[in-house]
Length: 449
Ligand SMILES: Cc1cc2nc3c(=O)[nH]c(=O)nc-3n(C[C@H](O)[C@H](O)[C@H](O)COP(=O)(O)OP(=O)(O)OC[C@H]3O[C@@H](n4cnc5c(N)ncnc54)[C@H](O)[C@@H]3O)c2cc1C
Image 1 (spheres, rainbow, N blue to C red):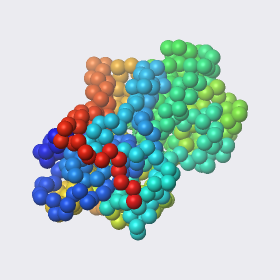
Image 2: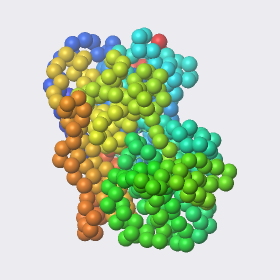
Image 3: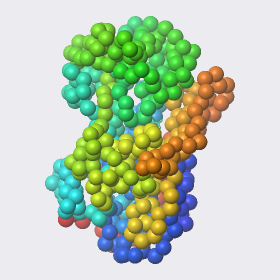
Image 4: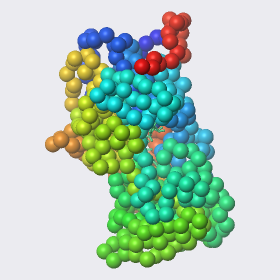
């Protein structure tokens, strides 16, 4: 297999419109790369990208990626699936490209980290040693935050459909298809901070689009513990322009608290703290969230999330461990795939710079998020971020405005579709070449320790 050059690394780090670290000047390696072991837990927007960029920048580093699922089912772009505008299969991505780069992809669940011994244990009973550990486990759902909710309630009756679990998305879509015309869909919105600030409201638009086109006598009742939400003016404009009479938005205020007090999965009844009772035919419950559990086992969490150094996404709590993506506290930087992909390039660059003994240059991060409010009508938020005063500070923020012309919104939508293709190619190294004759004899599995 021909190896990508360092120049390729710098070029690709800026590719895909996905933001980039400023690549350090890569000097000769200070220590033998073949001895270096990086273990990455979580093969999503953050972890898969780190694995890819480590292999581009320093192919001899031994990179093991521990990922629970053999196929990644993206959360991003799952809302158009719920609205009937995309298939579930179109969200699937394999790890074949990363394997072609000799990332050791292990399908297993990391259950424990021993920072003193620098080891990761898995449910399958294996132990992997690391010089650097990268955690990008995404979110876990706080089931016990809502009385009556549980993993079983989610799996059977009231899906959250908010993680990489494909069965959750399929269940919610199936329930929408099964519901009679004239039924009530309820959405329980999450308390902040949560994965992708605009995603629940994009989802409301996509579910309402499905109801409007297939079951027009039905209603969507939104119960929100918050007083306001991301890009509210844009979504409220869409609710009234496209979904008048379908969406009922209940935002909390000084008098009414629409946080859920309790729910009953058997009857799909939801009771809010303000005393509003909704008997739903379909209930999409998106509870509060926390960093993926392995981050707590590694000692990286303070409360629900993981504090990091904004220059590198190195954990503030545990040496030689990076935490990125949704699990990290990235100040104003939204928990998004775009953000995680951008952070991943900084992490890979930082690991390689440390190994090379070269100076790190100032990192730059970027986020951009599109939300589809109706077919061919996407709104957009974007910003740049840089470390400042111990956190990440936003600049150059852009947000769509209400009342924009249809052709601009259509262009946004086309940009978002192009972005989905490019970020998933970038995460999973889809363009990596197949191994060649020079690779004969290389081992085909990571060493255990
Ligand atoms: C409905 C919805 C719409 C969204 N839309 C957008 C959008 O338009 N644009 C955008 O940028 N973002 C969007 N997002 C957010 C985006 O999906 C996340 O921010 C992003 O995936 C975070 O990346 P991550 O690496 O932190 O986690 P993930 O991508 O979720 O990856 C985490 C991975 O870790 C694995 N894992 C976890 N724990 C373990 C363990 N112990 N052992 C092994 N494997 C483990 C999981 O299986 C998973 O594959 C959306 C999210 C949702 C829910």
